[in-house]
Image (tube, rainbow, N blue to C red; front, top):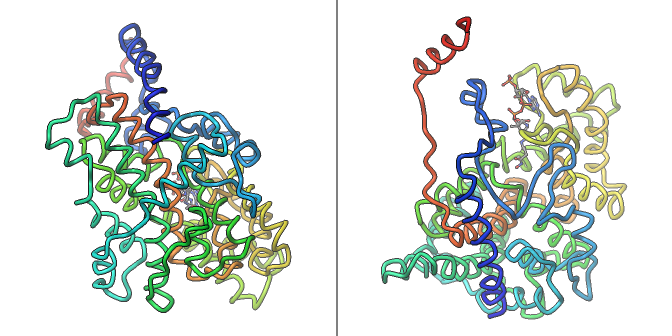
Length: 437
Ligand code: HAX
């Protein structure tokens, strides 16, 4: 298998770099932590490492060193589309090098060969309450696949630590291959006929999702590819990536770990913000029976803030400028659906909300994040049931977090176990700091 050979070829160099760094510099200080950070969700604490992506507060995400416009330019593309194969992005995340057409298609073929979803997964999903949230269904479906884990079997057979990454890669390919089918089945079960639509042999991973949820147009196939690429990774400290990493650091397999990560994606301060954004945009449309004026929207925004709610899709824990994942989708909408009324509202929100948040003076970043626009595009292309949107986010996010989990195994990253203190201890530390030297 090409991807295994390519991964194995990268490994010695990385192992040598990490081992040299640890041998020569393990006592060198990286950061200091304040009481504000200990009580404040560890914002800004530099305590994790990943080489797969990096988020600069001003610039936003780079995947393996590439910005989003660069990625969309250099990754191999299908004949019928303008957006790259998602398989090529996965190759880049895993190996760190831009794939050739053959290498991108190699991943797409691996996914095709592993895409069959065992029937018990459908049975588990069908047995759930009709009003179950799609994210609960998605996380449960992934967890139900756990008994397929090659890592867990090989661990019990006594494989060596050097071998850990191989079954982790195997499991990750097996799992990610099935995600478009599982997600599309949840969509069908919740909102359509409940039938399972088989993926098509002639379609790539992203396009198959578009086909299975019922919109096989070239435009929506491209949007699906773009969506999964943009949502794949956002360095290691975001809640879904960190939860996946923490769970996997105990040597639990990717099924357990991804399910844990998705459970944290399902909160409204994280991935669920995409459904909340569309709910808020549709609420504006209903309230004003169309697109409001700027002044009406300003007042409506203040009313929401004054009632103690956040404006979904705005603000970020790391970013201090508009999110380039927002910009990429905004540009797609501008090109393909400029007259869509919900897009008109999303645009107006972009003009009005940052200023209101600045006036309120609380949010450190008044700019839009990825969730401010993603649902607007899905709504336009017929995927209107907004409580499904976080599942789509999860399909994409699985790529980044699994790539990270494989590398963590390959480089022997240990069990994660930071230290906690009591409030009395922090008070004591504060008291000592206040005493004159
Ligand atoms: N609307 C209203 N208030 C906001 C706000 C927003 N969009 N963004 C931040 N604030 C408030 C915070 O609630 C906080 O208020 P309190 O002091 O009263 O607690 C204050 O401003 C300072 O917060 P911050 O330091 O700027 O932001 P945090 O790092 O604490 O939180 C969040 C970052 C993304 C959670 C926050 O901006 C937020 O709640 N945004 C809306 C929800 C959202 O869009 N989430 C998705 C983020 C991207 C993502 O992970 N996608 O999956």
